[in-house]
Length: 345
Image 1 (cartoon, rainbow, N blue to C red):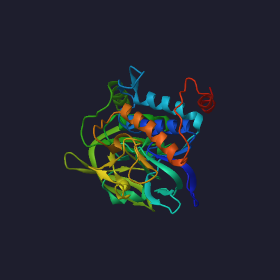
Image 2 (cartoon, rainbow, N blue to C red):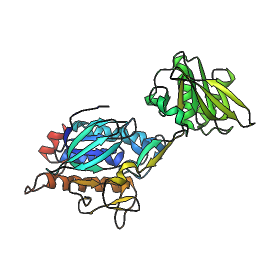
Image 3 (cartoon, rainbow, N blue to C red):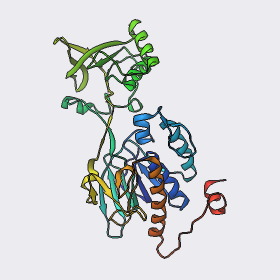
């Protein structure tokens, strides 16, 4: 993550690091257009990683079966020769046109870009964590309150509370045991957990060994001591209340897509999707392209393979836009010495 007072200047900014965004980086690289990439999630993969990292995908050309995780890793390997700059856990907050035709883009973490072209590959929107409706918790975001395991800090010697009941929540509680916390408590609104059988078995064994406590309840209030989160008041299903010591709270309620600030950028939209010219998947704003599930056009199909096609034509369109008057040649990776040089093969 980077924060800059002066803009990072780039030929291309790709918003979204899902499969289509990553393939967009690859196609731009073939056109010798370097890209920065912004994504609200802590890692690449977008919806594939957020929703079905370990579930099979059967309609990727040349891959009879691939998980979201495997597809993401393959795409990251494919773009590696072009050395894209990734900026994770950041959401683009504003986009403003400049007098010289470039776009000034800022994120919610203070990173600012000055880009000649922008590629919106945001899928159905930015996948942001579902949160607890407790304003008392907001001051502890990023210090004691976390929504992903990747962003959490060490819980060694601390009282950890995990709120949630799906596979991620259960696995997070189990993984915390390796850090020797003072206690681990999983709180869920229902008495049943939605996790893989092997994960549930490991969890039940940890509960039986008194390594983890499992409580069916809602979190109703936060306790604060000397400006630090120190405990959580919970309401159990029988109506009684209790207080849990808490040094860290991991809220694992999953992710939900939100259009966010994109809706306020003044781009032409239809039913919350960006309208594009299918010749190059440009929007009505010069230098801005939209690929993947975020766009719409007659005959649109929300498939990864469709997004790959859109990213290819968008890269050709961007090359023509950035180099007016120059012919954009069609070259093949099987035979082009220039492409071989770029790919390092």
